Length: 545
Image 1: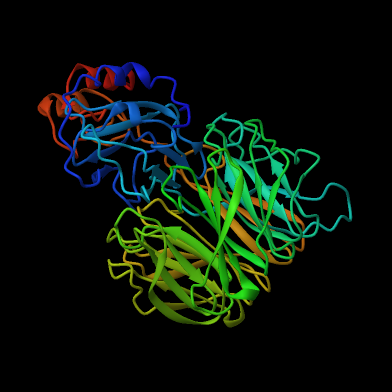
Image 2: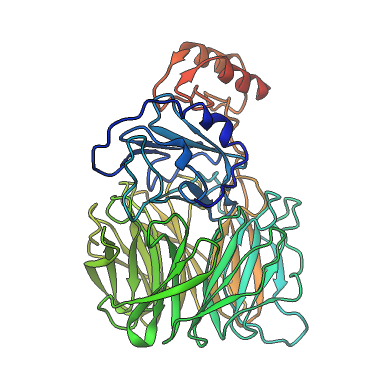
């Protein structure tokens, strides 16, 4: 097992090794419950992550390769691992908060064992949830317009990027991918609540020819965010390991062939580290790249999903079985491939769209706990919403008009009402914001003018005020426009149990009324240990105002 990065792991675990051994039942160790729940959209940013199993867990099998968490904005969530008295629940108390309104992915590796000698199934277990975003009044104002050029007249073509805290200071930074210069340029957050970033760190980070989509992850499990990028013309995927200061090491570039266009991160083989799936547009195949656990990708296999022109790809658990599935966008089709225990994927559901599915997103859009699909279709000038039937099947889609040639689709709870809103970006026009009515129905709300060509957007809390701002990228103007979301509500204090904006005697009364054993959900259980006691009172008094 790879050495873990949880400094406080051993002390709480060593006391549990005296639990009596249990005779092996011959079946797999299984996950029975998670907190936060899979696909939930309103998890606290400071949530303690708990996984309950069907039998006691062997604490010596716990490590970063068997239990780790990654948040899209905050990066790896390392911290203290502990095991409950009955041995069945493993908890990770992160040493930093996740960012508001972002997905958090939990990966459990197959080397996790029960005290009876059982092991987690071969493909491991993954789940994803979203954190709660604060409410804004959607009165967006330009906080900064900044060039992505190194010098006047340089042709950059920024298309795509990630928003992740690269240096661990709590402020989200930007890694922007550039098609003309074949590099990644990093813009560090100014860290002064203005939503502004500093000029990019020079030099840029070279990758393959015409890089485009990118995803952040911790590929070498060192607690620092890394990056992977699909290179369209280079027919390759580049992996850059982060140094923790905003810089990346030299790119490892793996030849995938045939027009690498989409990219997704998931644990393909259940070993606890994160692998990569990439589309190969010209051969109508997918390429699966396997991580050796150190961020080195050597093995490469192909998968034919059976549709034409694989363009976009994303991964999430579409049927609730604890395995990440693949959703593929191609020429006039969107297809769900369900993962199986044998290590493969099976065609499960296909829906037709008009045009080419340039990009897609996965999340619960209607609040039913199942992961749905939002996508944009470039030549049809429209986006589609496909709701999940609860078993991984896609219901008939709903079409929404966009500006000409939509390139990107992005999700985020921009109004803070507990559901995910939708932003489309159009090469021949502007950015459109659609608000979700909570049932997966979307209404056009507003457009944002692009200087030349809207290529993508990043909904992210740039100023740490609890609501989502938006970073717009214009690929022909070679610029980013950072919009601050006005009218935000400050994040609620945990001790404000009656949500009146202050922590006072009324909140103390609520806590005393709940004193003792308090099953979840229990707002007064501030440390989420299943009891309201002196520890919770201490936390409430810290917030007293």
